[in-house]
Image 1 (cartoon, rainbow, N blue to C red):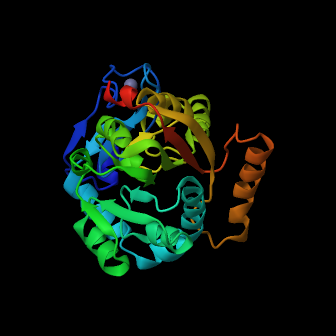
Image 2 (image 1 turned 30 degrees about the horizontal axis):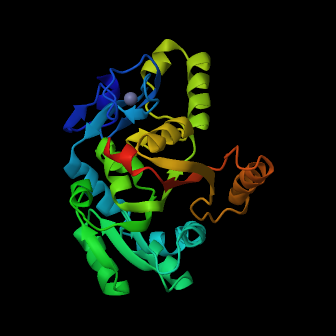
Length: 308
Ligand SMILES: [Zn+2]
């Protein structure tokens, strides 16, 4: 109560998520830490069965929507800060896409990634999906892309098949995770590729959590209000083990992890850790990915597994 009063808490509707949102197992004993977000105490829990890590409270969707409208409307964010990310993603997609391929960008916002891709590969046919109609209207008006508007249920009803499906920095916002895993193989031709961009900070966050456990008093731990390296906007944290197994479950093969560049930084030293991470990744033949973000690629192979 004292903490809430001191920090000006306001009433916020939130739903608790006590069971694993993917496999429905009752939560395991491991809690990775706790944080405060929009006046709500949220814990990061790890599922003992499937290994998913999830935020155990969901904030009122209206508040989340307003938050994103405020935070990400900045034009500069799309054009400049994400330039290196888009270039790297485009080169990866271009390598996977056959001539004249159809590419779907799920949660592709205003189409900037697909515009970068098509500039590199004019033969590709890009479609942009987003939950926001303002975003997809912009993608259609500025670049002439085909668009799909709505949440994951729009993808469930979609009949078209693609050669490459991309989800760049969207999977950890999607409340209906199980439905996403079910729909992804249905959107792809056999042999088609999936490209995911995700944070790669689970190890850092876990080490930070261990430090909090051993170096802080019980009282201090009870009042923990942030988790180092964890973005409180996210509702999931994905580890490689979970992703590999989950993708294999729905019919994907050749699951690969590789480093992805971070958001642009003005600080000259900001690039040093990323460079080091890239070198380590190359030296270990991609066995180790230590950059703050990673790309995951997988090939859709087995149609029968996806329907099971
Ligand atoms: Zn689970």
